[in-house]
Image 1: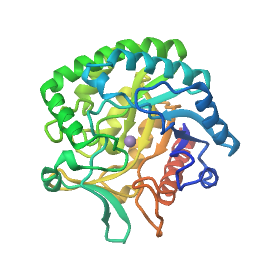
Image 2 (image 1 turned 90 degrees about the vertical axis):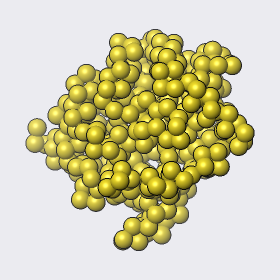
Image 3 (image 1 turned 180 degrees about the vertical axis):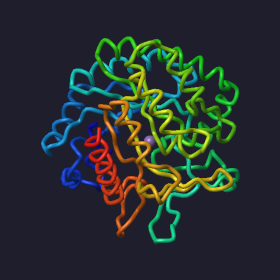
Length: 345
Ligand SMILES: [Mn+2]
């Protein structure tokens, strides 16, 4: 397994040098953030990003993410041009030595929480999802970090209506079309495409979400029979409902060589289906990190792994979920489990 760490580019308050100082991290996963969604990523820009990262003694082999334009998900307007651009971006990334591309097919909103600074009993702050609060949110007026903030209220309202009309089956059709277009290119370039599950893995605001559970992951992987067509298995996204058994899913899809990127983090599931993101340490949440890592070790997982979101601790001011300290603790904790289990094999 290659331990990586998400880095948001030169604007990120977490520096590459700080990341390099986490003993078991060998690479970062990053992206180019100022290219409009849907446009081609030029080779020079990718090379420049890679060079900056390599200069700090870290690798760049995973891109998280290359976003998918809403026109592709809705299969309307300029969707074919955006798909052609996506293919060109895959080719350009492969020329620069990228091995894995993470993406998602979530309509309009990326991850959704009702609070980005919920205070836990130890004084740390975390991301939380309280169902009763989400039910009262007006999706047209939301703005959370990680979301595309370039939409106006009118545009978001129109998009939400378009997705409601499209429905789950319509979204599956459009995903199938996209996969059939891009996977042959990814296969040719030997790049692993890793879809990130929907977060949380259920419909919100009446908008369809389809990368949510075992049945749908089976259906997704069956869209194209090629190991380059795979998953970014996120324990915290799929695992915020007890309906998804994470170690079981890792064993199942790991055995088929369909997991290319492991996001590992813990969540505390509350009684009404709400959840709080917790420290990686198993006792702090509802997921057992040892069981999760054991499933990766026993299926011979050799791909990329990273600690996922962290809490805000020790007074750090950073991007919500993406500070240095708590994720560094996560990287070392996961690394300790990996070492212990791999040694015992
Ligand atoms: Mn994730």
